[in-house]
Image (cartoon, rainbow, N blue to C red; front, side, top):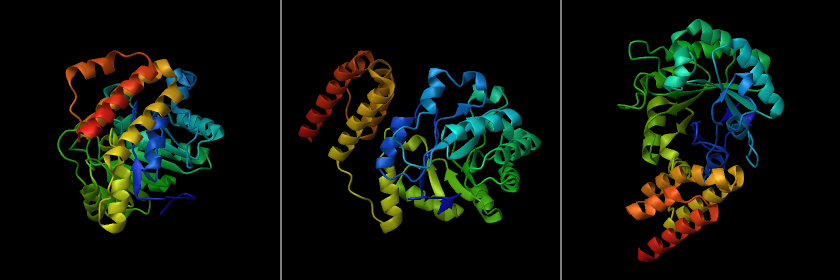
Length: 325
């Protein structure tokens, strides 16, 4: 499996999620065998290039190749300039966001709102592909709403522009994350184009990944929300697809990963900001390993402002909980 000149090590990808799939998250997922990761969405607007948020989002230190930078906006020329800028900084793949359903993004006629304007989509894709000499990929949904499911048209436009791969979330924008993902149109895109296709949406376990691959014929599966607090899902999927059996991922392996992820967060963001970033990951991890959390512990996690104290509190909690099992 290849995208451009990059050979993928597995069928799995980590979806770009603002505020979640940052450098530490991508690195811990790499340790569990994810085959492709995409950086958090970056505005194509040059005026925000040097904000702390953007600088963190374009920091790919200690990450393996390929470095995939996702850009968003609605101005073909501006996005082309942004793509060149990030290529010069070291991006090895440019991903274009046409799938984000957030109101703030769509009100700016970016993200999944672009699917309403196929002419503009064509202009953007041609402009970006022609501006860089690295692969360009696309993240999209099925369409703006259930009456306008035009992802097949978008896919043909993308292929004509020279886009190397497309990741499709199996919902319209107006669905947001409600209901169930639909995979029929993803299968049609795979049948009717020659691009690499990622299937995305509601893939929350290894057996579901296999079902979606069989149903769509897609080249790989892209995991978003199901990887949040569950980073070992990539090892589970990879082994299941290879052998038909789930690997044994012990509680200790999971605990070690959680604590390593926290250390990565502190190192990347610094202690003060890192403590705040870590809180949401801690809560999701504990929910995914079925740890019973009392309100007192939860309140302490939310209030602690010192990295070492937060780490020690969680480490001791996990150690005691493990001894009780």
